[in-house]
Length: 396
Image (cartoon, rainbow, N blue to C red; front, side, top):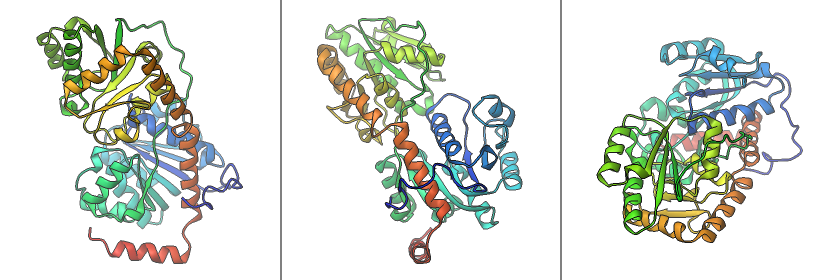
């Protein structure tokens, strides 16, 4: 990003009348995408001249529930689709206009494209999360990305796969890593049990078996076979949990694999604080925001050498990386952390430093503020001509 965009002399807020908007898939249920969307919204709220210049449109939540969350000002414009795409699109087209819009999911990009063609939006940027962008998109999604001010990926891996699969000019891609949640949620008296406590947080859906829950259970069994008494704590829900319980029974570690279901934020904070290691050997993670939460509590992380995870975990520095799907290598990494508390502490301290600097909310907000300023400032004539030429040389 150019020096002009990040110029510290810019005012803290945009001038009155400049309108900012966010299209989001969902914001009220727990999850990494939801947390990501709130951070973008908070950044926008800090930059807008006043709340009346802000527009929020969310596909899977209702407007009343969004306002009741306490995080959306009364004077901000809010649209809630309540899981109706028709209601969402109709309401957005009828009510919203913006100088700069962030589109929180590739699936919503055609709506922004239509708004721009109607003159209701001056510029928009499309956010890519992960594996939804690692495939060939629909014609209208590709068209919308081609006409966007830019496309934002959280990792180089996602940007590269997106460009390869969709023939979008690489010059349109920006990399904006996620950040840790720096809000101070007081921990409860919830305590994880066991001599060596491994934590994983995530949805246990059959459609998301790539997250590696079964590999972790197999690794815990291997640890016990080697005389290392580990306990795996699983937080989250999903339709695959019965099969995971059955696997734990078959491997003889059912008493050492504890399923806690969905838990309150205060209990989750306590879980991070009382675990020894956070592990998620996922094969298709775009980023893995839960790793940042673990790092925030100075806990070492174990992940797979797949997707965007190697850009989040620095192998041998903030955690350990293992081949995806290899329960033996996963067990070896966990045994290494089990045997060497000083090594664990060193990795945890490095992770904490990373989320306080390069992956902090301040760094995240600085990136998005600079982008929004750039979108509002617009492109000069020469840049517009160059961008137009790039777009015409690429086949949709």
